[in-house]
Length: 327
Ligand code: PBG
Image 1 (cartoon, protein in one colour):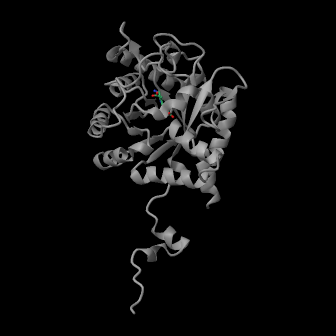
Image 2 (image 1 turned 180 degrees about the vertical axis):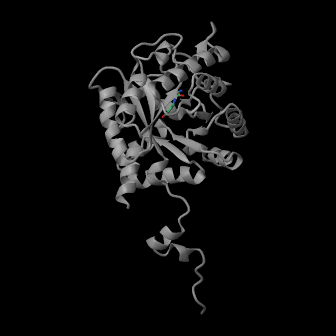
Image 3 (image 1 turned 90 degrees about the vertical axis):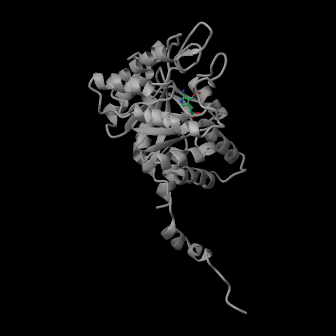
């Protein structure tokens, strides 16, 4: 009888050996934590469909940022729940609104924490769509661009470190870039939601952001989940218009898209591990069906392995804690 033939398994023989040959590792530096800012004071409204996530007023957000900074998370992505909504989304560029005040307050107290406002109209329009509508309810592309540019400028004035357009209108990166450059903000990068799919996984987010379309859906501007070549085209257009970071959203059902984009474009790629992806794991963990730490670490490592440099995730604080414990 010969010796047992061990080929691949010899590099898995101990944790130290596995550490030595490990190819991909999520670090705290990769993480962005989304926050939902609302008006008022002392407000902390937990969201039933996203355990651990709340709408918070600016004062509460500041306390939250203290924890985020202490955990070493480099950036937050801000979403606003405005005091008023209209057809044109005017509250999106109102300097007294929650997001603008939050940007100022966070930058004052935590100058090193990167503040990235999500740039879109859907939380601010009475109809819940991501742009200006015609009389039939279709989103008008070019009319929307000037509003997006105006919102971008108001975030830059408030002190944002970067802006992240998530509307999927054609030409928005160029329009925002032009407005920023013309007003002395050429140093502010754009992280574009380039390959954003019309996904059912945004359901819980729409509860938090109160941004469910009042009629119809977003399939006229967000991408068809069945397509992959189209994602490369979207990225190509955004890069041409000046995007500094391109994003794929959601993350887990679209790992192949992340990989194709990373292979094709040698530039920073972000992945948005969205609300529904978070809620699924959270619900299973709460029921005791899955080991939360294990599956979250596995999911985020999968996103990194697919090629993401940046991971936007509601798990960021937990992940940062687990990574710290592991050291
Ligand atoms: C705004 C926006 C959405 C998300 C981020 N920006 C919702 C949507 O497009 O309906 C989703 C984020 C999440 O589900 O966590 N356009």
